[in-house]
Length: 154
Figure 1 (cartoon, rainbow, N blue to C red):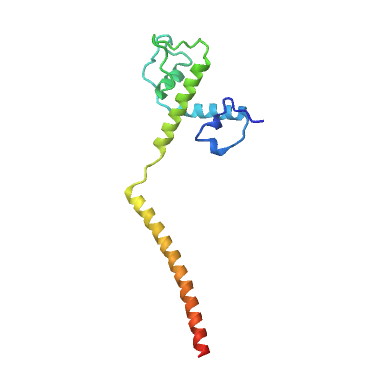
Figure 2 (cartoon, rainbow, N blue to C red):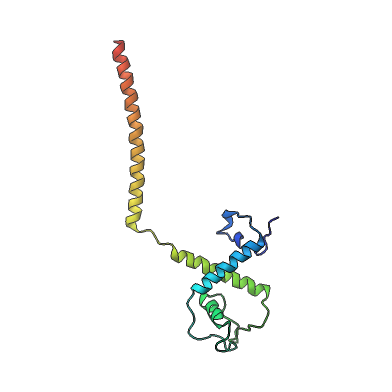
């Protein structure tokens, strides 16, 4: 039985993979992916929240979350790190994370240049012409064979 609750692989961009993996595998994959992006993100110069003391063990991680756009904290300028996360807040974090991942993936995709587009188009046309020439060659050979047969009958 496949669980759909918190199934990272049910993301629309990954849905076509239809991996059928368990909730635990998807959750572990999600945590690993989160860790990768957290480690790859630049750090904020100053802690943005007044309730996180300097050199707190989670300070860098919270700063990374802010840099990634996952959180901006509460309106009073606090992070409230000891407060339990609600399902609404989790949904917001996950939605922001999915947006961040989409943005990072999009940034990695190099747009195709006009020169490369022209080259690809030319290669496609050359292939089509080669196929047409091959077909014409077959037709010429058939016509030559028919002509030879007609000459023998004369």
